[in-house]
Each structure stands twice: as C-alpha cells, then as structure tokens.
Amino acid sequence: MTPRAEPPKGALDRALEILEVLTMRGKATTTELVEAVGVSRSAVYRLVERLETAEYLTQADGHWRLGPAAARMAMAAGRNMDVLTVAPPMLRDLAERTGETVSLGVLSGDEIVFVFREIGHQAVHVRSELGARRPLHATSVGKAFLAGLAPDRCEETVAHLSMEAYTKATETDRDRLRDAIGEARRRGWSEEHGEFDAGSTCFGAPVFDQSGTVTAAISIAGPTHRMDAAREPFGPLVAETAAAISRRLGHSDWATPHAA
Image (cartoon, rainbow, N blue to C red):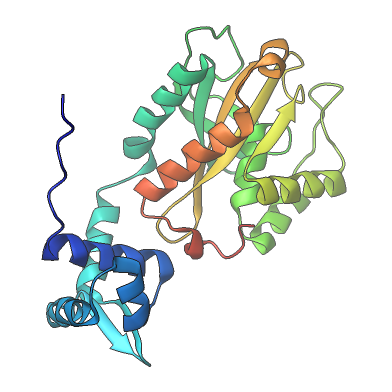
C-alpha cells in the first residue's frame, strides 16, 4: 500500500507549534519563533498578532511569552488531571513491557504509600501491596521522591528520618543516603538492591506536576537475579515513564530548577 501523504500544515498547526515552543522555552523572540516553526517572518507575525489579540501570547522586552488565556487553559487542564488519572495506562504499559511489578507511591508523613500497582506477567510476589507504607531511605520509590524534592526540603526530611535497618543492605548512614539521592538526581532514577526486601531489586523515579513539584514516585521491582539478568536497563525505562507521566501532568523540564 502507498503510504498516505500527510496534509500540509495550516495556520492552526503553526499556531500550536508556537504555543508548544513557548511552553518548552518560556520565552522567545520573533526570530527564534521563525527558526523553530520554519515559516516566513511575515507568517509568524500574523500568527503571533492573532494569538496576542486573543490573549494567548504577550510580549515584553522583545520576547513573546504565554499570555493569560494560555494560563487559564493550563489551570483548567491541571484541575482535571491528577496522577491517579494519568499514570495507570503508562504504568500498565511498563509492566507489560518488562513483565515485572510496577507501583505508584505518594508521600504520607515520612513514608511512601502505594496507591497503584500493576503486576507483570512474570512477576512473583514482591512486597509492594496496594496501600502498604514504605520507608523513604530504604526503597527506590522513597529515594526517588527524596530526589525530586527541592534541596532544602530534602535535607529537612532526611535529617528527621529514623534510618531503621530492614536488611543487612539497608543504608543507615545519612551522608551516604544524601550521596545516593544526589546520584539519583544526576542520572534520573534511584536504585535499591535488597535494602528493604533482601531478595528484590528496584528502580524508581519521581513524578512532577505542572509547577515542578514532586507529586509522586514510581518504581519497578522484581527478584534480584532476574533484574540483574534483564536485557533492557530498568533505570532508564522507569525514568522515561516517570517523565512521560510528568509531561501529561503539565510539567516541563524548565519548571524544575533543582533537578539535574
């Protein structure tokens, strides 16, 4: 069959591209919009003038930014989206792809509470029951949430953790926990190797909302022997899924200045 040719882009497509550019960059000059959208300067002028009239754009100091109408639309979308609405389809996809147990947790006091779980086709029982509470310092999902916090809030939280040992591998030294959190920020995911359950290995990543605030964390867990032998690297997979959930919640990378 002959592939169907895509229809040529119209004014609406170009206007949406402009809005997307400004959503990702925060601001841009007309010249930068011309380069990003790939049309003539006169065409971009017509589009931004129309968007400005409708209050979707505003201009100051030679830069275009999203206007009040765009802000109202974003706020309305945010009110109708929460992590429990957005995350499950993507978590099910990750569980199906890997065959392992995938979980979503939110903060409750100084612990993580699992609010969603999907068991993969080759998963055996792992200690991630729905509604179960988990320590922040000894789990990948907990360390992922800590990594997503602003540095001052993270430090305040770490300073008050009980640092209880659950297995011989549990990290009970606060300085080494801080190092692990810093590493999780740099690479985009956290790891736990038998620190809560001696026989399991887990990888976690934080989920951010529209404001750049960490709102949840996800993890993937399985028996250590199988996780270590897997062909696909679980860390990048869980980080990729968390980032996709965050984008659906309205988050952009520039909204989280403390994330490495």
